[in-house]
Image 1 (cartoon, rainbow over the protein chains, first blue to last red):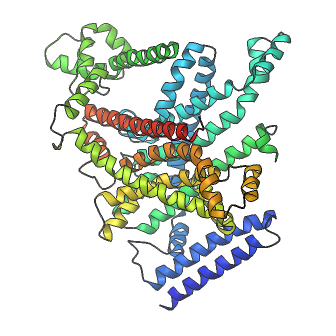
Image 2 (image 1 turned 90 degrees about the horizontal axis):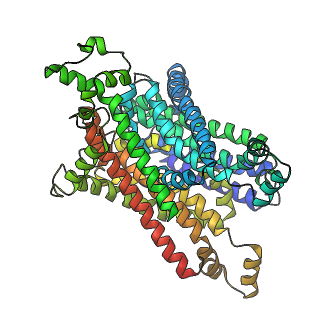
Length: 281
Length: 304
């Protein structure tokens, strides 16, 4: 019971400190803006730990953060093997193939008004569909190993990427196109010097959406069949064994991988589209 | 008019490609069947045919091509097979039947809608809290944004099992996953929407001596509607994916996800494809319905 009271006290303390920080005179500082969410996260983890211990929640319902950390540290080799199988082999290769194919397709259909008018509504429609459902079919075609996961990822990222790139290639204004015309620029010159750079914010928007989709596709596809390695496989078998600390360790890996992947794309975006208003503030 | 023509021709091209793809995908199986039935096949045995180019096989055994579109358990079913299966399992069966897609679709749809309602409601509440409280904004908002980069769907099997072990089963676990997936897009979109009135408009309300709640109901909430609908459309698609994935780990007996899983266990490809199309049609209807509501609401508000 003591621990539960402690948990409540910790929650109030954390909230009070954050309220002081957010309402205080230094709220505009970057350090404070970083500190507040970190404090909040640490408070949540602390309260979680205390509540699980205080109420003696069984492992099959919710493991304590310390238990998850211990399991994480103990099974680093397994987690690393799963990470390589699911993220590096499945998600990343599918992401590169899918985004690359969508990018090239977008460039190809951009030259024809007819194709663009036909493909955009279809692409928008397909982008809203539950594409993960193709996973059982693709697993049947490409086997249990990472190739089928990469195929699911390709199908998932293709249409969001296509729609965004096509929209981006339309971004240059008529005035700018006319200027290129007066320079007697050829199609490809005006493409590489005007329209491709102008499309970059859209392209990166598509790339960022696709990072999450790629991870989802690779993990869910493993629920339909996989070799005895991989994050989706580990999650579904550990759930079966009620080893929830292992499941949480995998979720930590997925969270870290997802954030790092997204962050990497965002960093590249910052370097490429440094001229865009949204990057300059 | 021209754009409808363009869309139709793209769809037609996809269907033609699909039929064409059926030939190399199914030719091996068809030739094996033909050989068993006593037909003359070149090369004669399955062992010799393995590893050969599928297109070459189809060219040399052109008599078998029509059969690739009507196989019983094809690797890739032809469009008309999927359409026939869809028709048979929606219109041809009683909707209470275990083999009716309407029944399975309803199981998934009810979980989706319940989860979507919960997720949207909580998301709007949190967004209101974030807009009105600086502490909540600074502590919760970064986590809400980060959480969008995490494949939270990985949590689905665990949520099901944990809820099961505390005695909750049926529609609720799936709805929880659906709610979870639609929650964050709604929070992020709604916060953006509630912040969309510019300083001039907020100042105007100040000069009217409007209270905080008047400012919320008369300015912030109406101004957030376009953003809300944009994120609702993302949210409902995510909810449906959540409900489908939520049916996978328990080996559920009913629902579109269960149809997918059962089809993949027993190699019933036509069943997988028809469940997939049923899910696609469901998603399209839900997003389309939200689009209609959006049009109506925004029109009445005079925004479009």
